Amino acid sequence: MDIMNADFLIELIRTTTNMYAHGWDERNGGNISVLLDEKEAGKYLDLTNVIRTIPTGFTAKELDGKIFLVTGTGKYFKNVQYDPAKNLGVVRLAEKGAKAELLWGLTDGGSFTSEFPAHMMSHVSRLAADPESRVVMHCHPANLLAMSFVHSLDEREFTRTLWRMCTECVIVFPDGVNVLPWMLCGTNEIGEATAEKMKTARLCVWAQHGVYGAGRSLDETFGLIETAEKAAEIYLKIAHLPVLNTITDGEMRLIEKRYGVKTREGYLD
Ligand code: 13P
Ligand code: ZN
Image (spheres, rainbow, N blue to C red):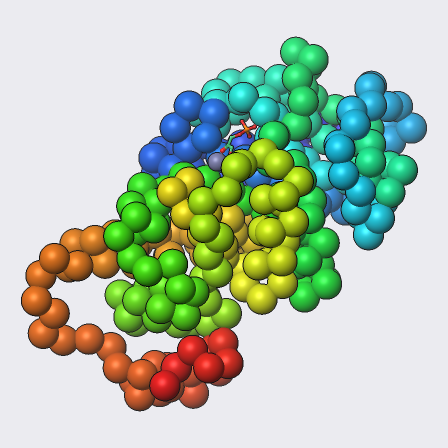
């Protein structure tokens, strides 16, 4: 079957296009990785045909043999829809994650995203927390980024501010938002630090850079980032104004009860 008809590919093309339209992915900003079901990938690809092998520079034995659809490094999200095979790739991790076998795409000889370590290490953390986790998404949404310049980076405080900005935030991300201080991107170090943060929450802000989200589907992960970004936008609209009304911790407890969500331990007073 033609991979251009694969739901996983169509969804990723739509998602990158939508993220660009939201202004989250200027130039080559942002990257996505999706864990594919081997059987599903096998319907479209000859899994014995390795086009080339790319060293990853790290190991992740938990992901050995796993297949991912990923965005390429230096590729523009706005262009993915016009040439998916050049801008995206399907890779299978081998040799305990030290190598990635290219099964499809990256037709111009390119490589997977420079943030591959953060993506793969985050998948390990999220799969341990939720076996149905499939997606890791990184982008540069302006309001979360701006907020990281003017708000305390204390994770509890950062989370509580966002929760207070829209009633539904606490339902969408009851696990909160973790925060990494500025670090050099594209390295194993930021990958390891991100993965550590991903053990306790599905969102991690990279201060002065962007955000990481993780979830079971592209839609869910997009919605997670979209909700946090909207909350950050509201924060920036009101941060310089006298605040007369707010959502109290008691009211958030009511939301918890009504919607059956459990907020991160110790985050509500
Ligand atoms: P890539 O083009 O390598 O995916 O990098 C974009 C980016 O956002 C780096 O953090
Ligand atoms: Zn980035």
